[in-house]
Image 1 (spheres, helix red, strand yellow):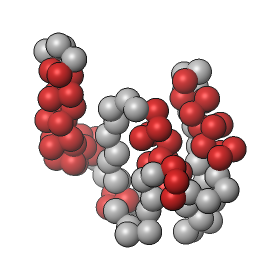
Image 2 (cartoon, rainbow, N blue to C red; image 1 turned 180 degrees about the vertical axis):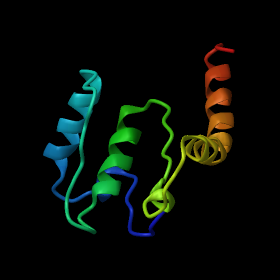
Image 3 (cartoon, rainbow, N blue to C red; image 1 turned 30 degrees about the vertical axis):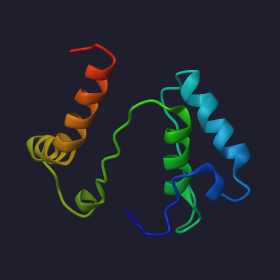
Length: 101
């Protein structure tokens, strides 16, 4: 993750409206939420803060390495499994702490 990426609400500047819109969209179970903008305006920071504000478990998978490659389905599946294996272990621990196996 870029060192400029924020993860705490107090570190965001003047993004309260966008933060609330995304939180409301997630809570109302919107099927598609698009965050767009030019480079370096804080899109990733906004997403990270939103997810942490929700207080629910989440996984972020960076698929930029696939952007310029032709990717077959099985390659994408393997990439996602490799990228998420450690995060899945953390989620399993979280679920166990809630008594879910």
